[in-house]
Image (cartoon, rainbow, N blue to C red; front, side):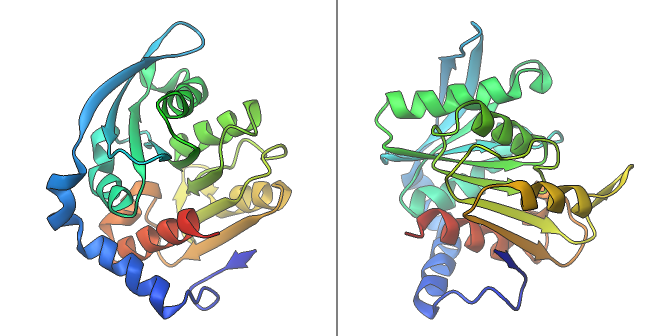
Amino acid sequence: MKTDGRRLKPTLQAKARATTVILGIAVAGVATGQRSVSFPTQDGGLVQADLYGTSDRGVVLAHGGRFKKDSWEKQAQALVTAGFRVLAIEYREEGAHGGIDVLAAIHYLRKTGARSVSVVGASMGGDFGAEAAEEEPAAIDRLVLLASGAYTPLLKMKGPKLFILARDDANAEGPRLPKIRAQYEKALEPKELILLDGSAHAQFLFETDQGERVMREILRFLTSK
């Protein structure tokens, strides 16, 4: 399903709930907690991460190339307030094993009590999430790709997928939209594409006037039935 600002019309109740979560971040910050954890990978490595919350609904946050795991703090707090346990990971060797690292995070959450695990990946983190989804299609319940997904077609994962991208987002090769749209078309249903105004890339969207909407869409997608 493709959508834009005119297409998406969540119920007033759902919109109010998502807005309350976002506005309540500052108050809830103390309650969400945050601690450092580490866990092994299937190739013998060790991934460092920040863990927030205690829910049995897990979310892995995979950052973009210009960011680190602590860049997700505000989004992690919003997710914890919405009822999730959140794991923001740091890649080994600057992302040389990104897909494996994401899988290790998923396995860690499941081994520590998570009954469901979703992945939110930004830029290269989304590409790592897509790699993990193709490697173990049943491991990820829901997948959110922020300005990513151009390189790995999601031909195996049957769970819901949400692509979010600014229309004018571009790199040295040109606009990102054509490649991402092409992979979106190949992805299995259910899927959804949200195009935003502007050119902010991935996590930089949270620093714009679109930031609250991006967080609302992520919360709506992860909490929908």
